[in-house]
Length: 190
Image 1 (cartoon, one colour):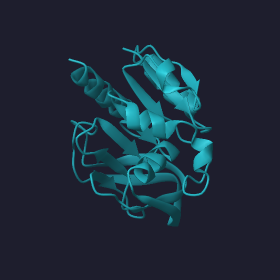
Image 2 (spheres, rainbow, N blue to C red):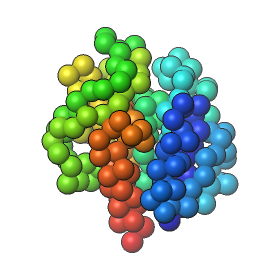
Image 3 (cartoon, rainbow, N blue to C red):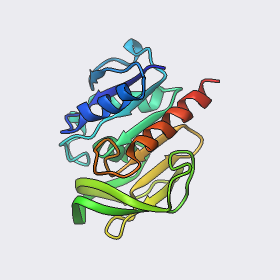
């Protein structure tokens, strides 16, 4: 299985790559301006990053092209998640209460990404922005006390988005979240 990590300038992009490597996935980090036609992958991870996606969309490279043309699963994390939500008609803006560090995730809908995980567990946050408007066609899967949209699924597509960082050790069940995503990839390509 080949899953590439799209580098959107996130501080933990290498950790996303490392988790995939640890799970025996063929992976590498690619620049976010890599043309879609040069991708030969089974899935993509859109990394986090420093851009305020709402007003610095140009710093997100070709993420929109990947979302428009992919016939394979995509996992967006933090800025990758914000971009995904905006791309499909939502809106992100500065959070009422930015989250940094520990938060308790409450899973509202298990779906495949949270398969066999507890309904509540600790996740690690690092965000000033949050999703303010959820577009039609996107299902909210989880929230925290301060952030109503922590995880999403795009209906009819194998696209998931996470506000929190499953790649860091402080997030409980982070490796299992990646394993669940890889199961989605396997099932999609059957």
